[in-house]
Length: 241
Image: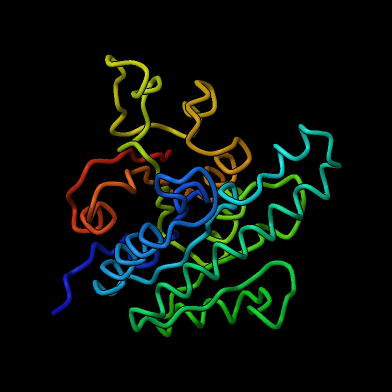
């Protein structure tokens, strides 16, 4: 039996960092954590929601860190894109082990392991209730996976971006360091930019604003958190006009 889904969330983009796949490790992939996130996605898809994903690569390689250590920035960014493909394949494997249909689509061609990005094909996968994971960012250096997620969400006609983090929304200061930090229930794109609230990078926020694409910031660590928001419950911050 499926749960009735609010119309505005019929198709969503889930953006998570590569670090979210590390679990308590300091590097790489933690299979139980990957499986837990896959179960969250499975629960949402069971509601009839079409789901696409973008996963960062910081658990394996972060381009900015490589650049800061003397590596040429473009090369470092391409290495970071390859890390996102590895994470996408790991998530695909976990989802398929649950009997779900999933496609990894890369902005950089690597036909032996995933599909190239073709917008109409990706939309068709979603219409067929396949989970689509977009890998390799935008395919260009100097753009983050936050920007890639916003770009793909706009191209796929998603109704919202769900940004999974370690905290249950956007705060006026770091809630881990400050006990008096206050969580926003709603916040505008311009306020996020003006106050440097760190939801996503500035180009991603500006792109979401220009396309009137709301961003839902929630805790990926809370069991059932992804689904509960789609059911009209849960704790989160909504970034919108």
